[in-house]
Amino acid sequence: MKWPGPDGYWASDEHDLIDTERVHAWISRESYWAEGRPREAMLKAIQNSLVIGLYSASGTQVGFARFVTDYSTFAWLCDVFVDSAHRGKRLGTFLVETAVSHPNVRGLRQVLAAEPGRSLYARFGFRQLPRPERWMERPGLTP
Image 1 (cartoon, rainbow, N blue to C red):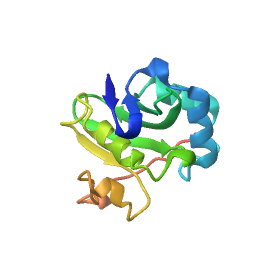
Image 2 (tube, rainbow, N blue to C red):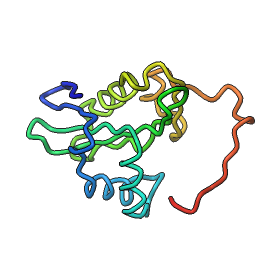
Image 3 (tube, rainbow, N blue to C red):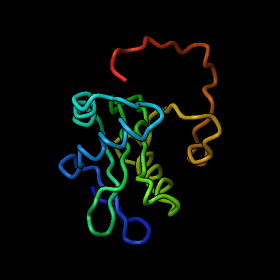
Image 4 (spheres, rainbow, N blue to C red):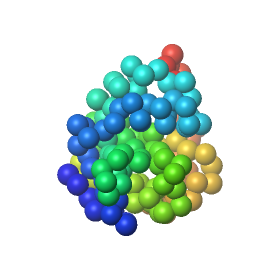
């Protein structure tokens, strides 16, 4: 699918449009949550996720988000990123809005992990877990 956005930008869930090298560079070098993520891990994550690419009017990829989901009960929004050269244009808002309203996940329980106080996500209904003490983590070896 393709969604029109502000100022000629647009989003798509087509895997074939994802610039995997660009996404890997953003996530592994510029994100605070996955610095150093190996290329192979990022490629596998893209392959096995519902992905949303954000593109300029010329078709250059300028952002990315993905859901880890079972398409039935649960969707984890992660790796949300907008290239620094394109920030300040409300593209993050457009990307998150497109992602959370995607027809394959819009009715599911959605979660994410983000720095506290990120008002962008609160605008779309994300809030603190009601019972965080019930959640546990088993850290993996891959960032």
